[in-house]
Image 1 (cartoon, one colour):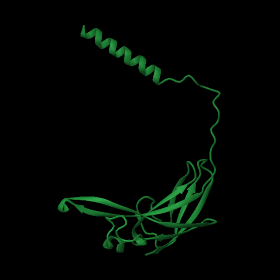
Image 2 (cartoon, one colour):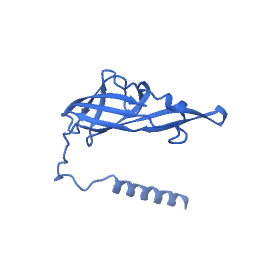
Image 3 (cartoon, helix red, strand yellow):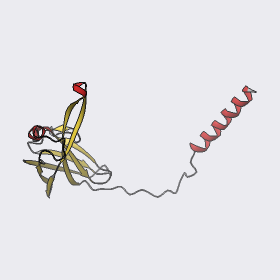
Image 4 (cartoon, one colour):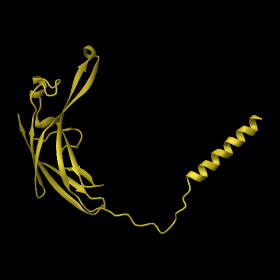
Length: 159
């Protein structure tokens, strides 16, 4: 009886695999549009820090968004980053506020649909701590893989 049940299960599994891993369409599919935009449409920044929890046994990542005024002129993006007042949010203390520097913030870019962005000439990797105290260059490659555009990001910090 067990042998019969195992054979039945194996057969059912094989039929399911056959149905899910096959395709009915082999030709006549429409060509999908390939975007050729290589734009940076926005930029924002965060201050992140590690804070001790449970008497120093564990750490937690603190994050606060830094309001950013972005001006785009040609291929240059000028960002004026404002450090919020201490206590807004409540865990953002004066000590943490004073530690915010262009040399250790996290940059996040909004780019064209399905494009890819790469740092150039030692620019910080976006989404990780980086030094934005000097002009940073990035290359955006459009979804079509052929269109590229180089961008320069310049930041100033306002406390």
